[in-house]
Length: 274
Image (cartoon, rainbow, N blue to C red; front, side, top):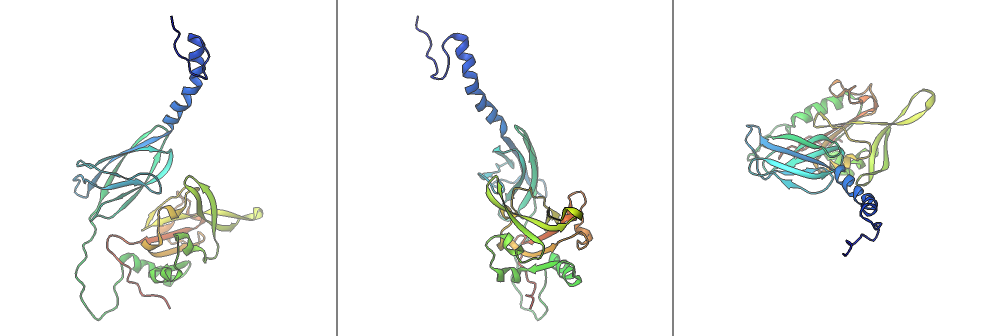
């Protein structure tokens, strides 16, 4: 009787061959268990499912579309902290932070709101209107205590990536680290703590007034591009940070960077600084 063919790395014999082959099979099984899965539903403010929304783990891999019931599945998501980016024409884009464990399936529920429709312009003789967020920005700028850049000032810098806007701010350190998607620029604040001397202190980001935690090995450049930014506020220490951006839970004591971006078809109309 002919014996069964053996793997070139397996030992002959019915039991020895099987035992010797197990080490070859186990790494494949373990590797498959490393990935997580993101599944969810995209709906409008009226809870009606939205089809054809584009969903992606920001800064990585493929984009999928929601089906007619608003459902979507993103497979092979690496374990860790991620930001899910959801966009649909006519709606305000959403960035949502998620935690994915090894072999875990995480369900998310995304609610999109309609973007404001542009209206025909009307010529008037009056001071240029400002976005609501820009009114607060200019009030805090007038009060002092931080470093501020509006859209016109950012444009004059001609930044290639968002972190280029921060290079001229005293106390801000831009460090290059090795991240999951290659070299990344991460932001730290230079602080002095007792006899230990100066040390790098991670900052807390806010995007459009909402805390936006960024992991230590992923750059804010993965999520924000200069073309979308209408204003930036930089507070290098706890004493400078306005009350609405204080967060002990999210470690705001090292400093806060507040980023204001375009929403829908809005544009920044704040006047340039002299």
